[in-house]
Length: 440
Image 1: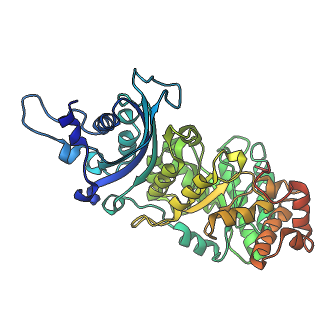
Image 2: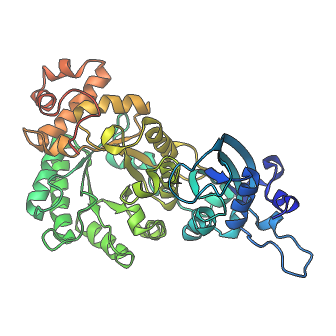
Image 3: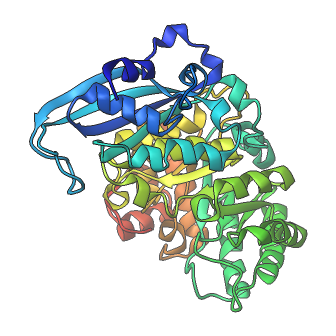
C-alpha cells in the first residue's frame, strides 16, 4: 500500500455524515509505521480491495472504514504486550484509534455488525496483532432499527412499584441440586423478607431434577402468596438459557406457569437470538454475563465489557447483570462504572437498561456500591448474602432492606444493627462492610 493509497483510509470526522457511520474506538499495538498499520486495519475490516482491475473507481468514500483520530500512546517499545506475533524488526507502537465505519456495509444485523468490527479483518490485520475494541457509538439512524428494552428502568419500576431505591434481587442458593419444592420455599421466604426479585442462577437449566415447568409453577404460586402477604409486587426470574430453537417455547412455558421475568445468558445464547426473543417477549428480559470475561479480561486485547453492555441493551435486555465491584470479579471500579453508565446514558430511542453489578454482595456491600455508582438506578443481587444468612433467607433479605434504611437515615450499619437482629447477624457472619467478602 503506497502513501497515496493509505491516505484514502483517513477522514475528517467533521466532514462525514455522522448518521451514516458507527464510531469505533480501538487500542492497537503495531509494528512499523502506525499510520500505515491503521490504514491496513480499516482496509481489512471494510473494503480490502477497493477497485476492480482495469476500472477507474474507488469504493472507499462510500464503503471504506476510515481513521478519524490516531493518538500515539507509546512508541519505540521492544515487544508487544502479549506473546503473539513479533516486532518484525521494527519498534512497537501503542496507539488509540477512532474509526468511522459505514453501517451500510452490514445493516442493522448484529451478527454482521460483529463480523465487521470484531472479525477477521480486525484481529488479523497486518502488523497489528494486539487489538482491543474499547467503545462503540451508534447514530440514531442505526438505533431506529432496534427495539431495545421493552420495559427499561422506568417500566421495571412500574411493574414492581419501586421508585426511590435500588431493586433488590436474590440468587436462590443452593443454586444447583435442589428439587423445585425446596427451591420455591427458599424463594418464598426471601420475598417475605423484602426481596423484589428472586432468581434462578445462570447455570440452572431445564433439568430432570429441577424441570423448568415445575419450578415455574411452584415459584409462581409462591410469588403470588408473597404478594398477598406483603401487599407489593414480586418477580420470579426464570432462566431459559438453551438452544436457540427452544427459546420461544421456553418463554411461553415459563410465563404460562408463573414466571414473570426471564433470564438469558446473552453471549452463550447469542445476541441475535435475544433480539428474536425480544420481539416475542411479554415480560422483562434480564441478561447474565457468562462467556464475556474470556473476551474482555485482558487489558489490551479483546473487547471491553462496556461494548458488550451496549450490545445487550441494543438487543433488548431490560436488565443487565454484570461483573461488579470487588476483587472477586477482577474488574477495576472504573470499568464497572463504565458498564453501568452504558446501561443508563442516552442512546437515541433505546430505553435504559437497569445495571446490576454483582459478585459477593451482602448487606455490608450495599453502601459502597451505591456510593460508587451515585444513583439509585441499579439492582443489587446477593446470593449467599441472603440465602446463606444464618437466620435464613427471610432474615437475609431483611438485612438488605435494613442496610438500605441505614443509608437513607444517614446512620452506620452498626447503629442500625443494634435494633435489628437480621442485620446484626449478617455483620457477624459476613464481616465488615466492604467488597472483600466471598458470599457469591
